[in-house]
Image (cartoon, rainbow, N blue to C red; front, side, top):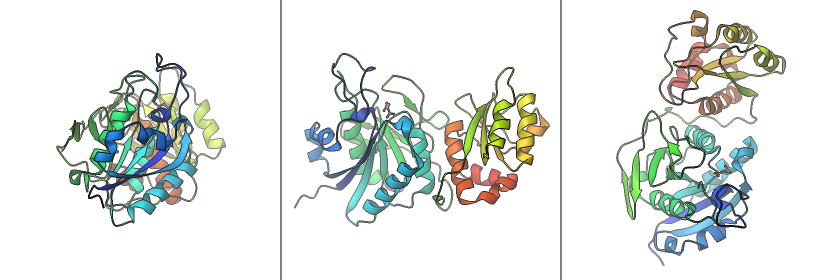
Length: 332
Ligand code: SIN
């Protein structure tokens, strides 16, 4: 009987499971085609790192991520994490919306073992495909005691990030993932895993997974906006709107007027920043009307939307309580 740690690989698709007819292009390929069994077989050294078991939870391009798949993935993580000899769990995912799934798992999972998301920017058939090394690094991290108690992690390009912070910040680079305000937690260099610091602790208790996903959308503030989208969202029954505000959370007056009306109609409005890094001030220093809208701190609009959707899905009354909503968001 092998003494290697037991690690479970849950595959959901993405470019890491992508293939092309020619190795010469990393842009023209089909994502989510290669089964997880083949991905593992392509990296024979994995067998010397962990006892692996794999499950094909889905096979999707992550642009098509859905709440149903989030729930299925979460249930499979819970299933495997409940087994006493499982050391860690790796989730393979597309890079495009990985930051959203990472946020959801960060906020909702109640598991002790490390859960490590990994992905690839180049398909498995590419010259210098990055998937095999990312998979190996993710499995090394999932099997490493340093990863215990560090929450959900994201491992790509030799870096370890907290799922709370990791975002995709480049269209094509293998170094596409960064934690813009916090920086990485550690790194993987060959067989060496180094976790240099702990992630932010996050909410004291994991958030509930709602039974259905509420209508929560993102509207951006920019020059000469109209109020058309906000009004349409209110008319369409939106429960929440994340505004991708300019700079340090400032919103065009036209949009503020529409958002004030939306809030009066019972829609939760949250300010995030479109800049890509930094913390949105509480309260905003300019438009006083916007001060009523809670901020998402340093969460980008996509991560803020996941958080707001989870909150409103599980606790719809929060839409009418901006102060409570603000406290919940800043506890992330
Ligand atoms: C996807 O997100 O599923 C496709 C793109 C990628 O994984 O890089």
